Length: 445
Ligand code: NDP
Image 1 (tube, rainbow, N blue to C red):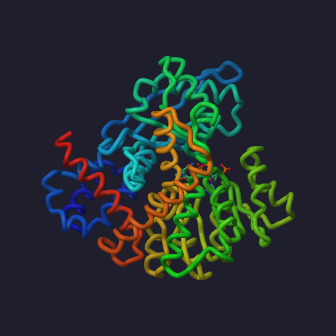
Image 2 (cartoon, rainbow, N blue to C red; image 1 turned 180 degrees about the vertical axis):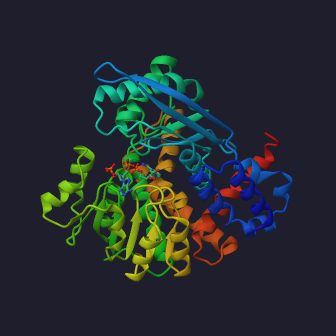
Image 3 (cartoon, helix red, strand yellow; image 1 turned 60 degrees about the horizontal axis):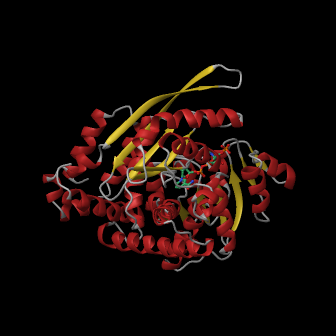
């Protein structure tokens, strides 16, 4: 590793020894910038890596709320305002058990480079709370969201920080948070994205991350002499990203044959009936086992074993570090051609190495899942100008944006990667250069 990058990662390891996921993301990024740093020795003079790896601001606060029995509950919430050099902080809110600062710092760092790849003026941020909406009543979810915004409202705004959804935060939670923000500030503005269509949302946002993933995958396959036609796909997760990735993969000619949730996975050799899956998981908030029961297909109560299902294409779309070295080896052994990440950092460092060593096409999430935030960029533009795009316009723009991101990542891989298919280095280099140059131009801030 480049000496400057190595020094910075060692300093981070000492300073943030307890932040495993943040260090993992930082290490992955810094270790892929060797050629960039060689060509730009001036970055060290500007202490650019030190500044990039330190969030501009972190807000941590308690969220007290009343459960249905009238008892006071308390959660911890965060907003990591990581980097605003190319635009207002932008990134989702995650509500799930175990959310902590390390996870949110890694996500905000990834988001900073991802947003730079989209071409929109969006900085990087991320937030969330250790609140799990599963099993909570509508009233409890609403009271939690309102209490969270009663503190967070003073730190966000359409030109300051624009949160969105993520794990555990969908249209319902965004609606409650937006409503409370509007009530406190008296302003109807584009402070959130992923809003409902009737109050400023962008058509196609729900589908955008999954669809965008497949547009990126399609471009990557074509560039390397393959196509999606007839390919068997395994998709982990069955949330927002996974459902629409499976749907678009099917539309582009592939056959999604397995999907999972946090309890287990199903295999349907005929191809997943995606409308049934959407009905169970999105509309009824049910479990994936209900799909297996309805279709009489195999169900395995070990989600991580999904990677043992033979396939041509793997789409990890659930959560971080869900695809480890054992999973990667199983995929390689079974002849996988491409792995495209819908989730953020779903692949462990050892699994990434396994794919690289075996020349598997590997699309890193910060590039391949950028379709969601790109559509959020369209939503921000729409709100600022009081415009409205049609679903068709959004989908066309999304396809163009994802193809363009692939082109930029691929070009950067040629220049800065270890090979022309080193898309991990390509994505890191392309995103980093945009942010780094903006930081230098803005002086010591
Ligand atoms: P959701 O909450 O909608 O869905 C997450 C899904 O993953 C659920 O089906 C959940 O199961 C499942 N899951 C969680 N843990 C595991 C596990 N260990 N093994 C298998 N399945 C698991 O989240 P999203 O779809 O929005 O987000 C998924 C990932 O994509 C996250 O990494 C997120 O940061 C990233 N992402 C999301 C974007 C978006 O637009 N939504 C944009 C870019 C990235 P269960 O139903 O049991 O909870």
